[in-house]
Length: 142
Image (cartoon, rainbow, N blue to C red; front, side, top):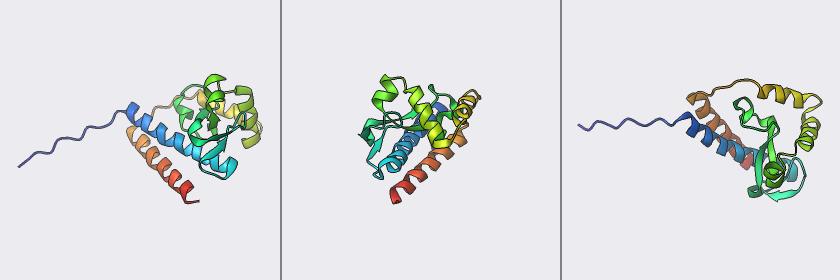
């Protein structure tokens, strides 16, 4: 009789990277569809330049990788690499876009949420992977 090898569990950091990859794909596809009605082309939230999806990042309104808002859909939007990486996220333009999209004061709500402490569990991360995979499938069916 052969004894099966125990399956190695993924680390939280590895799982978080996997969730981010799926989440980022979802955000970029979501925003491409919202801004151009085409899953392969979208507009940057801050400069509104039209870009191929592959040229867009999933940029956070509140900079940094705070766990409490890392996967917060209202805090992350398609953003061109120029704005996200080279212009520091264009915070003033991004703030104006957040207010336009979600209403007065929502920018403050996101900033306050970013100050909260959040530690993910393995099961939470696995659940998020599945959730965002399903959301991508729904977008592609439209």
